[in-house]
Length: 91
Image (tube, rainbow, N blue to C red; front, side):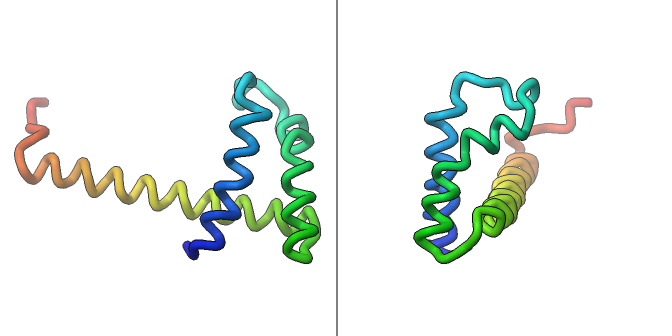
């Protein structure tokens, strides 16, 4: 992920943390969540010469990429813990 992509993702995530901090995403309709994120997505669309839909698609792609990277790092950490005896085969 480029530095610009990370900043793009961080900007939406930071905004989401402010406006959606009080909701349970599992119990709240996606349409409501998207409506709350629309202002920051509109700003990014105007700044980057994109449509709001393109911003949303880019956000989803970057969020997926970040999630995969976090999982990869987690698996590497768990693998290293097992390799070095921090986690044993106590089953």
